[in-house]
Amino acid sequence: MNSTNERESFSERLQHALKNAHYSPDSPTRLAREFNIRFEGRPITVHAARKWLVGEAIPTQEKLRMIAQWLGVPADWLRFGGAEQATGEAGAASARFESADVKLIADLQRLDEHHRQLAREFIRMLVRVNHTKPDAK
Image (cartoon, rainbow, N blue to C red; front, side):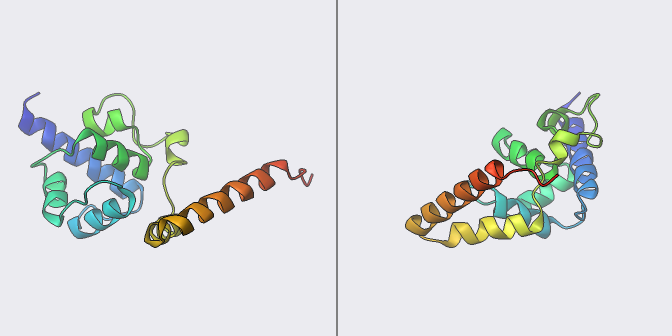
């Protein structure tokens, strides 16, 4: 497969994954915004997102893994296609973030380091309490 076909095929899989995750595949602005909320590295531009959507470019492996996690698809499938489908991946679908989770993460990132650490400790405490609570059967 030549590089043009690879980029176009990636674009089709990305658009398919976006649709399955209830995002519009027609909005590079929304793709860039949603990506930048989740990605800890350098943010992407709307132009870069547009290039991914129209098959002019493929993101780096690090960015591709984050997109796959966000959209709940296997990273290998997103990059290369193949037998694995974006749907029917129950384990991967559970990795998809809900919009409230994304807002919480964005809020957490706006805190100073001291308050971020307090929030992390509080969440860990809640998880421990939740796991030690007797089942209400």
